[in-house]
Length: 126
Image (cartoon, rainbow, N blue to C red; front, side, top):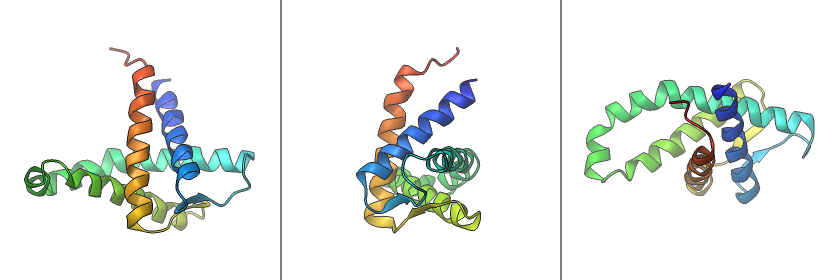
């Protein structure tokens, strides 16, 4: 149940990014079942990438993260969003991120902030 709630929170964060940025788009008809389904599938892909690929990239880039006092994590998050867009394209999912800056960079920040805010209201289960 917690997984479903976290996926819905990620889909909501993606929706906010789609609404605020021109470079991130869902090409399905707005407010249709396909649109919301696309957001859910992209949230699942984004979650899998963050669970599998992101720890590896963070480990490999540990020195750069320390040298930049954590600012390189913004670049990693933007890269994960671009990777999500690429995988969605390979699976013919109507989700696209135009470029690294400003779309992926600011999109990753928006998604992180919205996910954090929603996470404040989601119980941990501890």
